[in-house]
Image 1 (cartoon, rainbow, N blue to C red):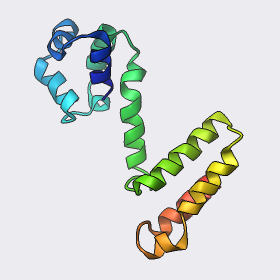
Image 2 (tube, rainbow, N blue to C red):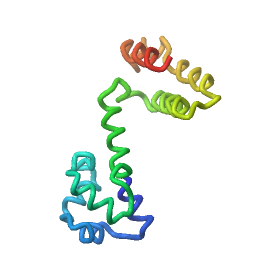
Image 3 (cartoon, helix red, strand yellow):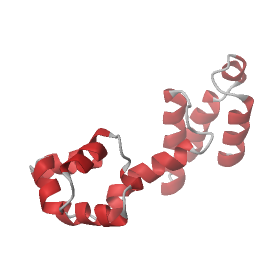
Image 4 (tube, rainbow, N blue to C red):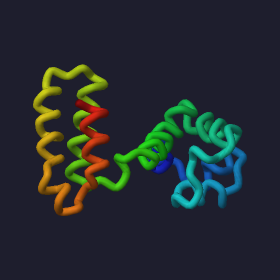
Length: 134
């Protein structure tokens, strides 16, 4: 989690962060344990944490928002190797990478009829991925 990483980087304890930010220690514990999603916290809590950690509010919530968005799409629950290929392809799209065709070939190779017939992914997953990224 981003907060744990930032705490290690700044050599700060969760208790010190909670005190300096003026939020309950239990609230921070719930966020760090995953019981409470950071992106579901109030803007005030995120602001206080980001101010003490010296980062933007966006940085703190970015990963959680991306995860939530992914869970709402057909991409959620894909096998790890297929998710890896899809993430690499999307990264290539974002960077306009010259290796985009190679990545698409790898992704497309992962979505084949054998996987569909074995039930690893549904035909709807395959159609969705082909339409979105082809």
